[in-house]
Length: 382
Image: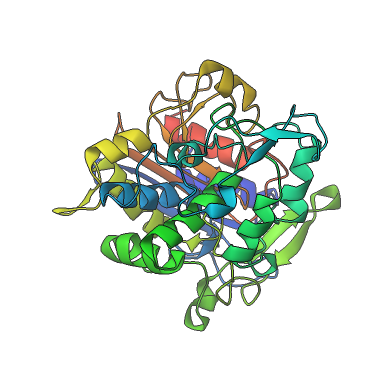
């Protein structure tokens, strides 16, 4: 079997990525490998503490933060969100998913916290991006590859959201992404803190996640990687440089995909989940909250309809949950997710495994790239 370093180096050599950092931890031992460089211009070598835009690896962290507020008694899973998000007090849904945005009917019931955590509130991306009600998510909400400085502040963002109809009735279907951003606004309004402040106080500081946040301060820019997408003939095109969109705090800290982090920081978060919510002897979450986060909440029909996003797997709170072994790396109970900037992180409770791979090339769509698939095969022991 190839070593972790060999797996990552294969994709650096073929030009798929400028560099990558991988971590595979089991039983208190971690193999960490950094290969390639932080940019395509012969810049600094990739290091174990290189900082990446982790995109949707933000989502499990957001879910954990929401569970903290539930444990505090500030909100409940079944509680309607309208008292804190009055913009969603009277939502409407398109008559059918194919209907134009002005052909709407009232929502059959209020949106609740569980709907947001399970991505079944009615807002978000389906497998068919061409549906009329999907277009406003791109145009008005900037629900696309992360562009933090382009998104309106939370109150204005929620006002725009209130004018967009649901694609499905609450609880009816799993839709990607938007629910995490709504959840971030909910966390801020319920807690009375900004989302960055709440995450720093309740998660990042207790876990020692010193390099995780919504911006990269000037003194850390030398560790911040550049971000690319594959252009014509696979040539990598720069999307964002270290001194670009993450060099200052955005007006809208995206709870769906706005964080930067390192493999070490996300490893600390993963260890907390594997330890039933504790760090050292300090409980951050109850074991029941962790169980709810890492348990599939979808119906078989909802899993099937999720299409390429989850590849038929289930969904917990903020991440996918493997429910069957459809590929060598699918292990029932594996929890985690992928990020559109070329990142992936999972925990496998049955084996005590944490697997993280951070790279810096944008995914072309929901289909997982070979960089990730080869990494998962390595973790699975192929």
